[in-house]
Amino acid sequence: MVFETITISTIIAVNIGLVELLKKMFDDYRYIPAIAIMTGIFLMGLFSFLPESHLVFSQTILYGIMVGLISIGVYSGTKNTVGKK
View 1 (cartoon, rainbow, N blue to C red):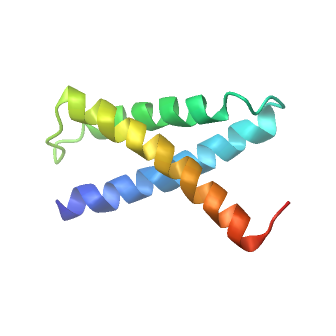
View 2: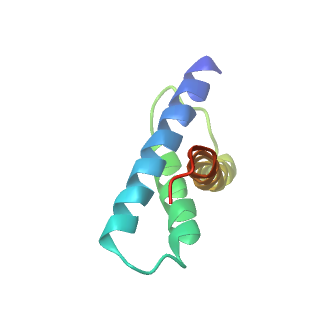
């Protein structure tokens, strides 16, 4: 359980970085939430292949969606708190 918590936290940070990289590459921001969710599902899919992971397919998809939504919220909340424009 502790391994999964630490790993999911790391996946959230990696997802934030990937989404920010994609924001810099593309000008159209309308699809960024969908891209964040898709990259979250992809990263959780990679995590599910680790031998320490005991996730089934449905859990992987659900956790991937949660990782994508959390990464969007963490970035947005931090940006609004700091006041970056």
